[in-house]
Image 1 (cartoon, helix red, strand yellow):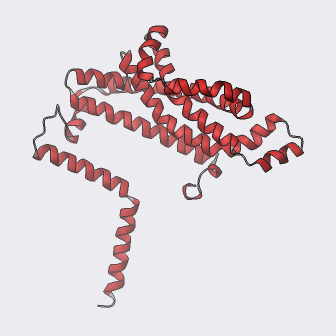
Image 2: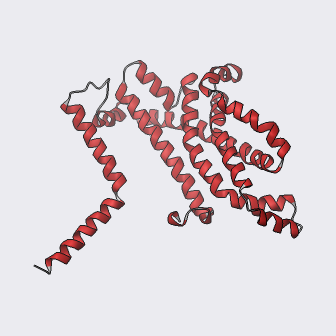
Length: 268
């Protein structure tokens, strides 16, 4: 009897450890199972809420070439807008952090731009730039650049003053101060903003496709709902979520690979 207690205790600890490790996957599978059972038990029409099995079957209704075409159209716009936001935001953040005059001049304008609903401005952007990729890239850029600017400025200004004074006592120039002290110290803030911006880039691409597009997952969802093909619309939505998660994980991988010291100890 006594010999069985340690064995049962060890088994219980093993089960708890596995549950703790795979808790997200177990929760996700449980939600899908509850969703499927509820749709079948209550006989919910698919045009109101399709069951996961119906959503999975919707992928087979269209060829993979069509799906890949829509995925690439959305991903291309999201990546171009995301990269443009990084290229503009980081140098702008450095300028705002180093110049009080520039900060007082430009930061209120940036807040006004961010406070303007992009959905309301999107038709004007499409009318101005046309119906191709440029307006959708611009919409994505407008949605993603502000978090990067704000977090980058916060990180650059959070650099300890003693480090700045030490660099100046060693007669380090402003360029070295930024590259060797401020930017490395600001990397955790910058990567946090970049992770947020990955999901926002997908949102920006979809907003642009809602306004004017002939391809893309946002266009596909809008087209499917207009014909009450709700399972297909949900299938497109699942792909959008998957794209956001993939871009987020890529950003996490880049941080772990090239700047692991910028992560908390528990995530290294």
